[in-house]
Amino acid sequence: MDALLDMLQGMGCDIDGAMARFLHKEDLYRRCYKKFLDDRSFVALGEALQAKNSDEAFRHAHILQGMMANMGLTPLLSILLQIVEPLRRGCCDDSLLPAYVQLLTELKKYKILAKRAGD
Image 1 (cartoon, one colour):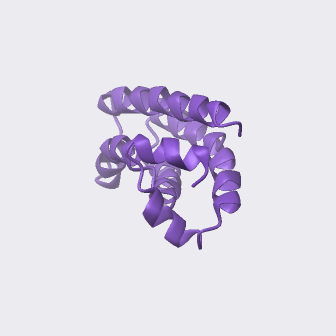
Image 2 (tube, rainbow, N blue to C red):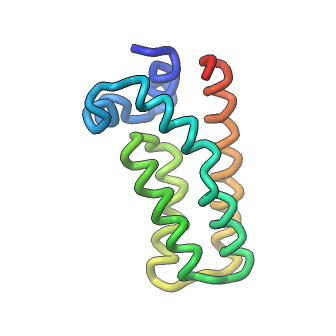
């Protein structure tokens, strides 16, 4: 298995499940992973949370949820769900901001991991 995938698996990601969804095409996964790390939905989610726009925040959070689930990024997904579920119920207040900050902090680790793996 590729170094990036090994490192992700070591962080608790469901790489075996993701590889099944990606038809065991590691190069495709790596390309998608790189795009995911810079996805505009992370910024848009923060903007919508700051504006207390629950519909827009939910839309971006749901996009990220799908990507994280498909890519097996379970640790990130568990943080994001702390945002998605309240938004699903229409709650969009400042109580969601700590989880958003935690999500961005963890995302930085995934970006560093990609650099260490040479991607």
